[in-house]
Length: 556
Image (cartoon, rainbow, N blue to C red; front, side):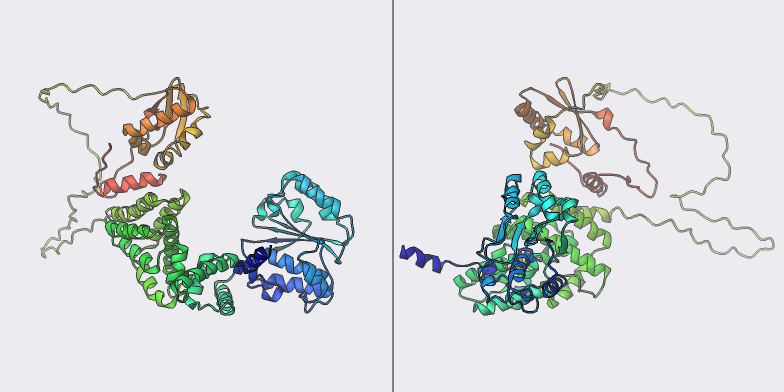
């Protein structure tokens, strides 16, 4: 038994638990909340219900625990709990301060248990405090049961609700609470706090590494301390200080030099280099989704610099990186940056794996190269005509037009009679063109289609996402645009749909493409400018750009 106590004492305590704020003064980046709560404590104006909302790791639960001690403290100091009185010492373990996780205690029975307790006076402290974390997870019945008590609770009860998704909390609950919105932790303040913690722990933490941890935590102090905890263990194994390299290895992210190199390859339309760098990062266990996320953040920074030259206040970057940012921002136009951001967002939306990441990079290289061939030609400049030789009688000079653009006629004459040209008969009869498949009676009600799509691969599912589907006898009729027609030309794609349908329904369906429903009027073409359709999907745009650039598409 004694050995168990010894092991428990030696158990490591996570840094985010060890350095949780104990007073309002230790809470960072939330002065608009801490000052207000301190003033309420000093004035004795304690509300009966508080609602703390904000993203994870911003101090919601910490402020609730500090406030629970402050309202029961017998000797508050400038609105903060003294931490030395008996109430402050027992608040964490007292039955009068109850913390409930609504994610696992969300039923109406759990709320009824609280409603039965509120009628009794506190056992040890001045107030009974109920801290309900992730309150948005409560069921509708549980919220309804809490309404009346939350509106008029006993004078010795204080409710403190915390949530990360305030839009899921009913308006009737919001109107009965004092609402406090927590901001994301400032990167500079988070880095300074990490340096202070590392000094207390006797850890050597590089300032740049602290800033990188703050940027990766995305405004959450708990995530930042957790990543620092992992970096401490990594540095202890390597016997050195915590640097940016150590943090990148722990987080599984690519260094900035790789991000700049991939961006240079995209700007140079060099898909081979972009894929080589990505393959090298993947071999080092770098997460493709994290790489795409970093590229998304990087192109966002380039867009900000493009719109606000010389102003780096809105991006998280080191001073030595400013020159590279300015250089790369000059390589792209605003349209290029926005198009690349769209492609990166699409890749993240489908949980980008290695294949999706490579396809995304190729699209960013190839489509950008194709757009160079879609530049609109300038209008033809009239040919300069030398001045006519002086003559006794002035002769008006008729402007000369290029052959590509003849002058418009002033009047239209009667067309000459058409001459019939007798063509030689063909040497071999052409086979008749089969009529397109038309399905007139198509039942759009096909509830099994969702389960069929789930059994397909990511590519097939994405192609069928916007298709119209129905059933006609033993045929699954799919209607869509020209891109979907190309998709159905590949027999492997059709076989995959039919196999998935057989697994879901137990019937042998035949997947067919309804050509008549997908016909579109041919686009109007001009002699000099090729106009693109106004409403096309991104895949259609991609195929159109590739075809225009002269790249052939081969269907298997």
